[in-house]
Image (cartoon, rainbow, N blue to C red; front, side, top):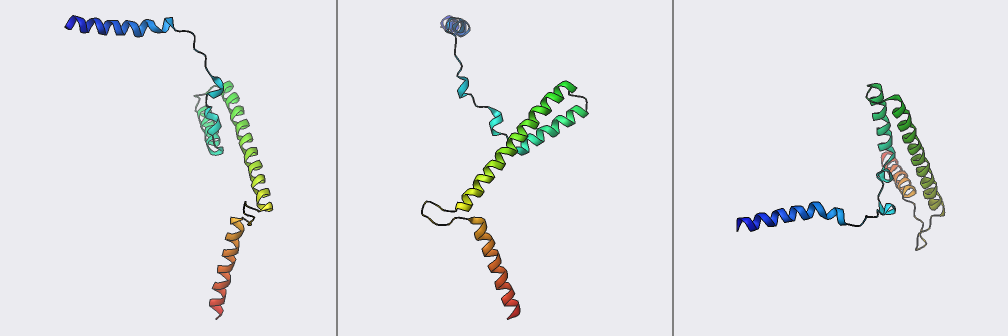
Length: 129
C-alpha cells in the first residue's frame, strides 16, 4: 500500500513538472491588464515625488534614475491636475445649466449658502428682538 501511494505521489510530481513543456504558448491579453497608474490620485503622485526626493538626497537613488522618475511622475501630476480642472469645469457647466431629469434646479452648494444666510438672518432677528 505504501508503494502505491509513493508511486502516485511521484507520478503526480512528475506530471506537474513535465506538463508545462507540452502546453501551447499562452497568449496574454494585454488590453485586459489593469494598470496600477490608473488609480493614482494627485496626493499619491505627490507623495511618490516626495519619496523620490528623499531617496535621492539620501544617496539611495542614482541621479539618472531620479531625473527619469521625477519627470515621469511630474507629467502624471500635470495630467491629473488637468483632468481635475476639466472635470471641475464640467461640474460648473452642469450647475449653470442646473436642471435634473425632472426639470428641478439642482445646486447643493447654492442651497447650502442660502440656508446658511437664512440661519444668520434668524440669529440676527433673535438678537434684536
